[in-house]
Image (tube, rainbow, N blue to C red):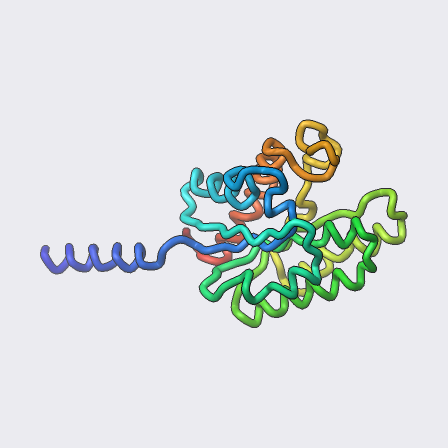
Length: 206
């Protein structure tokens, strides 16, 4: 009986030693929580939602307002430390708003994905859609970036990060772009099932 109890305790200790799944949300102001308190930003709200569903997770906020895909690439190594189990990659909105050539954004995002994969860090790719006023050709090229990269690299994809936010006044700030606290809750409710799929791929059974 003593041996069995010790073994059980040992197993529990090993499980506890594993600790929570550590995610990094790498993004722009949509991740950072523009004009919102830290506890209302996307990573914090998502972490609470996952914990409420019994998930042991920690999500670091590596969002920088105004950041582009190339900016995210430039700071990748220090934004995603060793020991990170997975990354939620949310970049591209600022490239689109500036009318940056979609080829530039595609290359930067793909380089981020490849470099993380080389480090053994899986990526959940959060997609973005181009604004209608940028024209059909630009929209087609930009909107294709995310599904193309997801297919090419076997990524879990959430097609549109701002689903349920864009065009909904209560969910956006006066600028019509950034989510309100309610908007962030909407984002989290939408992306939550995809994040759980991602987590199950990282740590089966958790």
